[in-house]
Length: 269
Image (cartoon, rainbow, N blue to C red; front, side):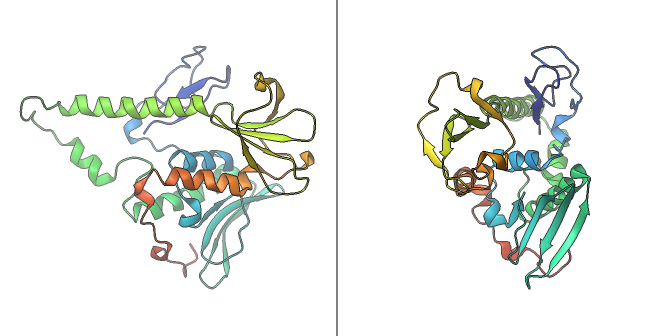
């Protein structure tokens, strides 16, 4: 499965299948020759959030809390506390087992990411690509069947191309996601082509709106990361963000039957 990132030199969208940036020609450090077997590894909490959102994962139903110190029973999570990153599991009895507590964000994220994949795989869901059984089956030599059937190699190329195209389109659509302000205390958040705003000082309510007040919205960018000095809550910790994730999950039947009761909540991890 191909993944996308931003070029370190021009900020353009780059796929893991691109040896060089298609915009400026710079070398792509994330280039992977065999994208079919590549598992994209998020290295930050924000990248992990994006990974889950792009795949329509209903994190509330799955009991994964990314960027949140969630205290109720039956939960996996990761959050930042000062310079340290804490990965945890809240057992069925409410007892917390800390998997990692340290300064290495990439290591912490990977710990939770691997657990997320493990929970998905145990339910027959493969957000990182096909299962090992499927890969083995597809790798066996096959003869072309009845007239009109595509050869296996052509079929694989088409499927990989479609996956790459979808990832690139998603990257383009969300490249301007982030916070924007016009100087009157109102903070806006852009997600894809949708806009939200908040004026509740110290509150957590975000409202959907039709558009940003000005067409040249990029000139009013406040950045990708939330700052508590703005006086509004973090959009990605709001109910509006939760609703976006839930709406994405409604289009993916893979997670419709997810039952958190299938998780071993009594073990340490």
